[in-house]
Image (cartoon, rainbow, N blue to C red; front, side, top):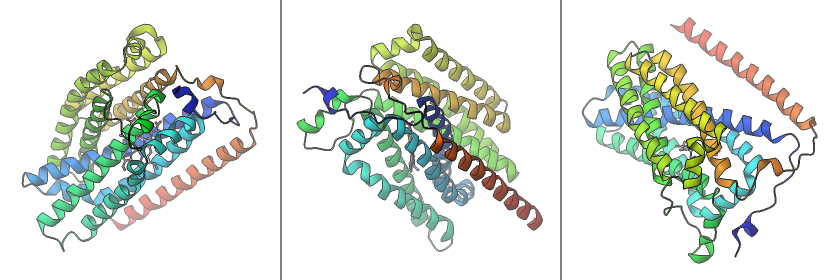
Length: 347
Ligand code: HEM
C-alpha cells in the first residue's frame, strides 16, 4: 500500500497559513516554558528531598498545581493551531496511537490530583507517603511528555503508519532512533529551565540555597543538553541532517541562532544572574521551537507542503479572533494587576 493514500486531504484555510504557523510557534514556546518549570522544578525538589533536604520540594510543591494548569492551558492553543495547519497528519497519528494517546487525559488528571493532595494535605501525610505520591505524579508527567513526542514523530512519517495493519493495531514509535535523543533533549531542557525557576523563586524568597541549587541544575543540565542536542542531530535521517548543516540556509541559520542564544544563556548562568539567564532562556526556547518547526517541515516535505493548502481569504472570523485575543489579554493583564496590588496590600 502507498502510505500517501492514507494522508487525508488538507482542509482549505480561511487566512494565509503563516498566521497559524506564527501562532503555533509562539504559543508552543509558552507551553514548553511552563512545562519545563513544572517538570524540572518537581524533579529537582524530589531529588533534594531524597537526599534529606525537604525545603525546595515544599516550596515548589506550592507552585505545581497552578503551573500544571498553566501548562495545560498553554498547550490547548498550539494543539488547535497544529490541527488547523497539520491536522491531516496529527489526527492520524493520534488515532494510530489509540489507547496510549487517550490515556494522556487519565495521566494528567492523576498528576494534577497528586500535586493538589501534596500541596493541601502535606501535614496529614507521612514523609514516605507524600514523597511516593509526588514521585508518582512526576511519572504521570513523563508519560504525557513521552506520548507527545511519539505523536509528534509518528505524524511526520506516513511510511510507518502502515505498522497499524502489520501489528495488532495501536502502536508507539519505539523503532525510531531519533525519538530517544529528542525526548531526552526536551526532558534535559526541562531540568535546566526548572533549575532557573527554582533560582528565581529563591530570589523572591531570599533563599540562597534555592538560588545556588537552581543555578547549578541550570548550568549543568544545559551543558549536558548541548551534547544531547548533537546526538539528536546525528540521529536524524541523513537528508535532514544535511539540511541543517548548510544545505537549507534558513533552517541552518535558525539552528545556529538558537545554539548561540543557548551559549549567552549559559554565560549568564555561570555568572549566577537568574534574571538575565531567564531572558536568554525565553529567546533560546523560542528559536529552538522555530528549529523544531523547520524539522517538521523537512520531515513532511516528501508528503506535503503547507504552501499547497488552499486559502479561501475569508478574514472575518480571523478579525473576530484577533479582537477577542486583544480583549482577553487586556482582561488577563488587569486581573494580574489586581492580584499583585492585593498581595502588596496584604504584605
Ligand atoms: C503537563 C504535561 C505535559 C508535558 C510534560 C508536555 C510535554 C510536551 C513535550 C515534551 C512536547 C514536545 C514533543 C516533541 O516535539 O517531541 C510537547 C508538545 C506539545 N504539547 Fe505538551 N505536554 C504536556 C501537556 C500538554 C497538554 C495538556 C496539551 C494540550 C492540551 C499539550 C499540547 C502540546 C502540543 C500541541 C505540542 C506540540 C505542538 C507542535 O507540534 O507544534 N501539552 N509537550
